[in-house]
Image 1 (cartoon, one colour):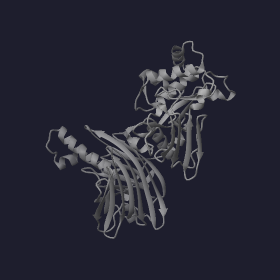
Image 2: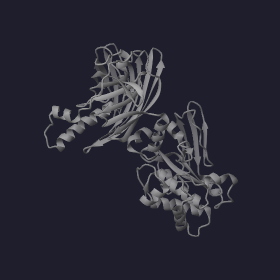
Image 3: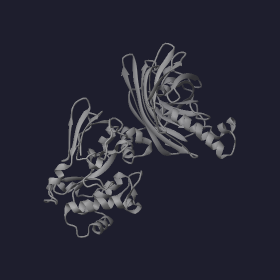
Image 4: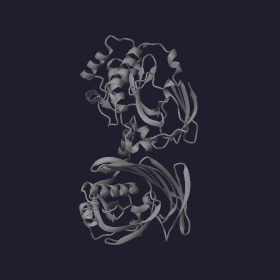
Length: 505
């Protein structure tokens, strides 16, 4: 695994230029800049790595951190194929410093030989808002690459001498070659941003313990002016990468923790994963709020992710990782306007939880203030939804408690939904927190949270946008607000696409 090195390399290059400009120097001497950014040297031990025969198969997750703050993620996998391996990676990162920023979302797929040398590639990347697609194959003396950008295609032929390797294989090669401590290795790597062949030099610092794990400490010259330190375990799994002694770090993470972060970040619509988490649609939807019914197909939906239905949403699997989804709000008009008694199994939808604070005195006070003497269930729901939408400004923030949302008057869609659910449950209206995707004009489907309240029937409402009922582009994928409840979202983010079948206005 390797982090999105071309993004970080160019960020560092521009950051160095920005630093020189801030210091009012026409160009900071290279030696001085190297001294400023030089990494602390690791302790080299006497051992060297044993040569690996095969790469570590399976999936791996990583977080990217800049100055200690999480700023991106990487998800990689290695699968064995005939005569080689398929190495895939999804990553997204956004970094800013000294007035300069860089953001990118990259999907890479490489077919490699048994020695990890490149056979073919398929890369999609959006860098600072500019999308580019690459596809290509390795020939005897060249690499032929088709570049698609701004709707135009061109073919670029790169000359090569010997084997060329993909970025995702970089950290494995010193172990594959069995390079000894103190030894060096020169690798020809395909740089997929500049579409060039770039030489990268590795040295083996030595064997070290990292967080209780025996690892090999490697160093390369991938980034300008600074060393890139890498720690891999004896099986070849990357444990950590560090630029300038932890200034920028890529750290291996537990899958469940990584997926939880990914789901939370998608719901918060954080810039670093917005491109990655966007669910593209094959055509635009005009005036989604005016729709009465939508029928669409979701492709790429994993078999192990459960389906979510509701009285307004019907879902069925049609084979080949595809779902047929039909959302129709029209039957709601024929429903009674007030609850016909609370059903016995509604207790869980009236109870307080750690993040739906229906029993808190301040929530109770606000509920009375908003509703006054309103007794009709549907009318109470409408008052609460519109109050939350008006009171809380929609912002890209981390999720917070309903009490924090009341105090700050800002929050993301989860904050809106949890505050609304707290108020509704405090008012005796059974309410459940739901999540999925919703259409955003000019973009596609974004991940989102809203609610469903029982008023004699389950009524979908959106307290972020003030919609009662929520418009029919709200596609429910999960129910509940706990990390376990929202786990299905992490299984689909970055995988699904939408094909619009029918729109009824």
